[in-house]
Length: 184
Image (cartoon, rainbow, N blue to C red):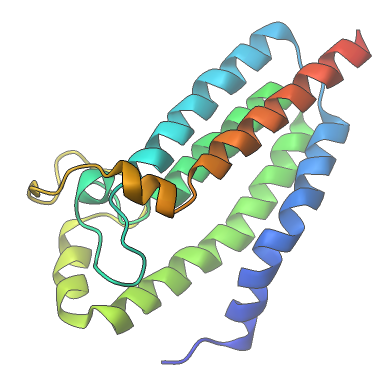
């Protein structure tokens, strides 16, 4: 089944509207030292999940079933959820939560559905078994797929340019810190 126009548009606008959502969150932000610590803690958890996932991901070449892909079919998006929630906790306002919630629900729901269809197309037999044994988004330790001998690859981490998430999160953290200092 080919990709719909709406799916293509949402995919393009997820990246394009991200900076606008971030600016809105920063405008509404009222960070305090404790909220920035929570931001860092949850953000670090999100970065670890994303890094772990990217070190097991051979994009469009091989179905990822090792590492965090044993517990959830979408660990990169789960990492993004943790990063975003960390940002919201750091911002410490309801409008920031609303902006993030709307952004995440619209764009990541579409991304997960698009990804599922793409994996069905690329790996029809393997994906059907994988889909039956591993949850879509929220991880399950009870339903984890069998362990794989595949180990984390630092080369894949670099090839997948995951270091950009770390740099982006650090930049946003500094912006929240600056916002806190400006607000007094």
